[in-house]
Image (tube, rainbow, N blue to C red; front, side):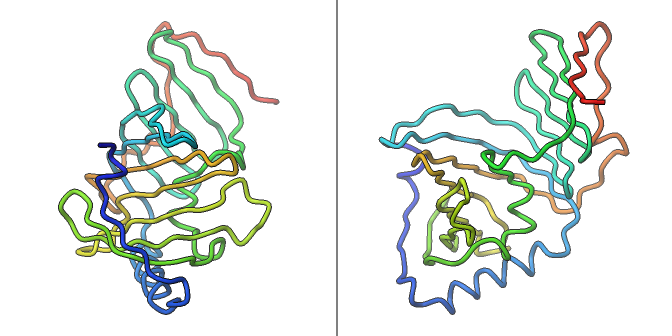
Length: 208
């Protein structure tokens, strides 16, 4: 049994938009005053035929356009202007200008800016990790978006998002599971900067 099939999901008709709007309002209230978020995460790719593909886990810290993602063997950091990618196996750091990629789902951007960009398709309930959750399925308002559908899973007890499922134009699904979620945690001043370790090869790809 895959992680996805372990979720009990009961959809409601899209016509019941008010209940969906209530869920969105709860999410907005929960996140609109949040400055930063830290969590452990698991990302899983599901192919169009339902097979589970690449999976990896790590920790992430998000704040505005800044983020820090650490997975085994790799660290990715951006301060919103510069991005550092450190590969531990090769002891190499790639430095580049930070550019948003429309074909890459930004968990950071979604958590804090989803309301104006997506419309509600349907809502439902889920039992995930033994906890009651609300679910809301969304689609982008922009018909040219690379992503076709998003499902948000919100924990009933505290209105925190613990899962996001994203389906792209190729019918590939990305599943983000979040746990150990901290809102506005204390952050060190250098959280969104990266200093190459001694002896690392530094490859600077910036245009300037």
